[in-house]
Amino acid sequence: MKKVQIATILLAGAVFTASAYADGAATFNKGTCNTCHQPAVDTTGPSLKAIATAYKGKEAELVAFLKGSNKTKMETGRFAGMYNSIMKANVTNISSKWSDADRSAVAKYILKH
Image (tube, rainbow, N blue to C red; front, side, top):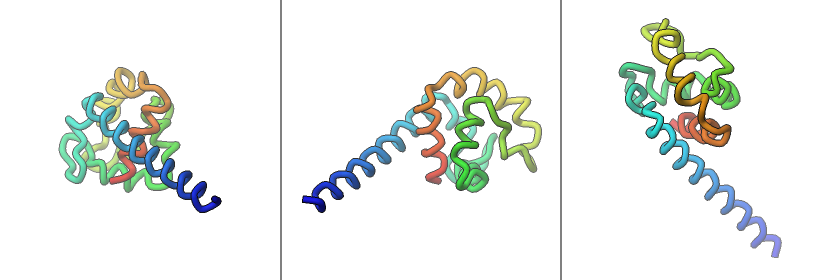
């Protein structure tokens, strides 16, 4: 019986994680974040892979950034100055209006890269 309970808990966790990933991807794309942030290639903005590397183990900091409560870690190199010129408006007008659950799902989606 315990094996069944443990298997059920593990399966539920896997389903939640997959669901959060899918929801995060959908919210990310609906918010038009994918216009500037591609999975593996820097374009107008840093790639999801670069963002995931910068925020590795710091999901709460990424969620805080998406809420507008925290400065970005990506303000370096060719992306220096982009926060004030582009991202501040995007955070203010898009991601700060998402629910906490949406911001968390998007952070999880980004960090999977």
